Amino acid sequence: KQEVTQIPAALSVPEGENLVLNCSFTDSAIYNLQWFRQDPGKGLTSLLLIQSSQREQTSGRLNASLDKSSGRSTLYIAASQPGDSATYLCAVPSGGYQKVTFGTGTKLQVIP
Amino acid sequence: DAGITQSPRHKVTETGTPVTLRCHQTENHRYMYWYRQDPGHGLRLIHYSYGVKDTDKGEVSDGYSVSRSKTEDFLLTLESATSSQTSVYFCAISDPPSGANVLTFGAGSRLTVL
Image 1 (tube, helix red, strand yellow):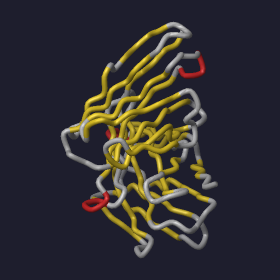
Image 2 (cartoon, chains in turn brown, yellow):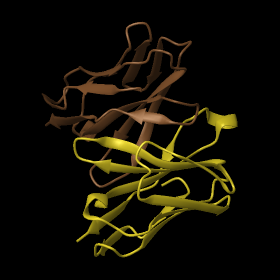
Image 3 (cartoon, one colour):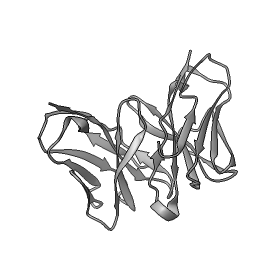
């Protein structure tokens, strides 16, 4: 059974700081990994999708990396802004192409 | 939320009553999912559908049933609601040919079972 862990569960940083969020998964036989953002009381928004053949994926100030062999992914946020405050979740396929297992998320607070 | 509508958005009900949550999409995506989100457990898959009348169980399917009679609608039914089913329920869609398993989520339905 795929298990996904995100550490830390919560993170508070001053505005402008660069930061890294971590995601670990137990079954490395994945073909992609997704990072999502969730604002309070809202649904999830897909940020980045990394295919297993890729090592990195970038979107604006966000950069996600994937190391299948070690079962890890990181989400790098450059020059953090208060608007980045949200919960960030990673998700990997498990038990079938269309089943996805989510981590419990990292709640980020960027202080002005 | 990108062509996905969940209804109702909020519901309070009593133990033992039936509840149906509706997910409606206008994207014509083949796959639809129901997740529940609880503190400390994250998002867990309840059921999913890979086509009209084609559904399968997720990891927490006990106490839930689903139906999909049209591409655009996916219903989640709690036959006899229990307090442990108090949660926020999210519907999601995906369309493999165009976007692998990139999931698009609805805004959620908050259910409270008293």
